[in-house]
Length: 265
Image 1 (cartoon, rainbow, N blue to C red):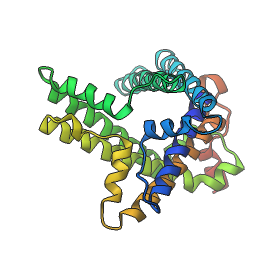
Image 2 (cartoon, rainbow, N blue to C red; image 1 turned 180 degrees about the vertical axis):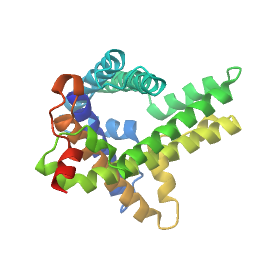
Image 3 (cartoon, rainbow, N blue to C red; image 1 turned 90 degrees about the vertical axis):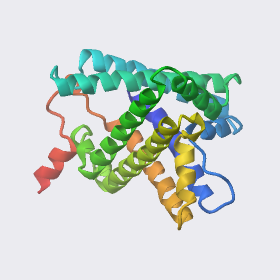
Image 4 (spheres, rainbow, N blue to C red; image 1 turned 90 degrees about the horizontal axis):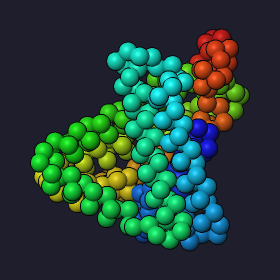
């Protein structure tokens, strides 16, 4: 779990930094896979990619175990089953990304954007393909709203252990979650257009969402805020790597951020 969150933190530090740089330079904002592709050429880049891949594999294993064994105590009701299924699905998705990152490290990865478009076009070409892609867009939008809600109402404070440093950076954690959720909604909108028009090329990832911000009025300012938000989201993932509480492992006696705040007030 902690290795997985750390790997996610490294990824979004890269994406956020490149986005912030693109706000004040001629370069284009990069999505997750493009940012990782640039990392490969850096000193120790292959070693870093290997670390990220291993972390994502570890995160996959953690999410699948968490969903099957219910170590975070979601329960067996409809809401709990949905949350646990979501853990398993996101675990498998991160495992797939980990495979791509490992392939990138050894020099055999395909272009991420072209691969995504090919997969979506294959789905669109199936009978009922458009509703399938549209459903995926709705799920992605729901995930975005979830992150916004998680940040806006400080829900993350229920599963992070109390620590003085976390109290000081709490506004950054909130900001990062809200920005990341908003960007996921933008990605979902592009998938919705792809489903509506039957054109896989209209679907975009995080890089296209960032580019769409830069194309707006005051776009470079918006892109700069988005880049900083992704760096803050990376900070949130790193906080999860260090202070995440797992109820069935850590026990009920660990003081959370929320409990500490309530005690002080």
